[in-house]
Image 1 (cartoon, helix red, strand yellow):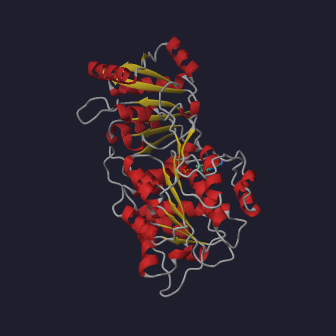
Image 2 (image 1 turned 60 degrees about the vertical axis):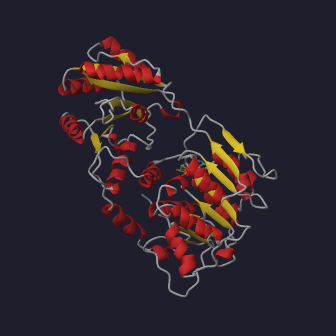
Image 3 (image 1 turned 90 degrees about the vertical axis):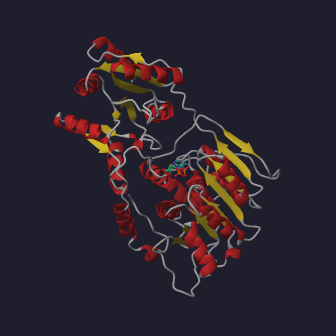
Length: 464
Ligand code: ADP
């Protein structure tokens, strides 16, 4: 992972990479494979493995609270009249045109007088880039004091945002950023000179109230990012709100969230009253573009043979294979590796750094098969997965079909309008009954596949 601290006070973060690595290496997870990743970790991993924008077929929905809000959308960054050096940075990052959420949010965020905004869209749609651009545009580089606060729920997410800001402001050498995160210290009695503070709520609150390192009355942009993660973290809402109360009435509030629940919205309205609310509706997971199959097997060895037939029968791009237990996943890794397949394993006991490395290698295609338990079935988008195999059906603790997990697992394939294949390997009557319940639940046929049959395998190939 790249660390860019170019135009910012790198002296404060000389050992950023080192700090990050140490932190990652020290962050171990519990061994329970079935436990979901904490939301903040998931969001971080997503940001790290993502290569580009997620596009959605669905439209922006706008609720206008302020009749004077500019609600036009821009199709190019030029139309936003950004500072030329900022525009240069944006293009250099490979952004040719604004994403859907940026089209609508940016004219609002950059308008004068400033408008409050609450924006919700799934992760990967360009929210961070939108508010970072707005933050950088609002800064007066000639004034040496904090003018912008951006709150993130964790150390790592704050660093991610800072890195986007650093890249975007490559040609704005006078704009400086300071991280207000654990491990960052300021000399007592001094005043900060950086224009942008990116940090976690507790640390920022301390810096403003306890140590008075800067004057909150001079802040003109307040960004709250990953608000849905904040609401889940003890104390974050309260700390954010206490910071917010110290800011001038004229301060522009920008509130970003990937979800739109009631708790998030009441937090949003407390932080950013009288906002325009924009939502990019989530692409519905209809499973329409996924061909679903099942293969009847008698033993796990039989399942393995089916897998080998599938794998040999079609030119698979990349596959994800889900097992119910870590033991089964390990067994499968061993079998496949012994047969010379390049497989990787993603399981619960890896450190964050190891997970990132596994996902990165898979995304780069170094391994074609990723074997995993449920840990990773949610949230992580890897675009090129063409086939998902349920080596075991996902079950709840009461051994009923776990529909939600099924949807999330097979939703790994056929993303972004591409076609995908999902294959369930089942044994015995019970599995068949569970499979029928899954069919019924989603109102989608799951076709029988005989992996020994050439015609069947040809049909499967045609689905690719
Ligand atoms: P979010 O904050 O909604 O999760 P990000 O702002 O992190 O989304 O953007 C997701 C990915 O898309 C990042 O890799 C980012 O660099 C890239 N990206 C953002 N805006 C654009 C754009 N206008 N054009 C191309 N890529 C973009």
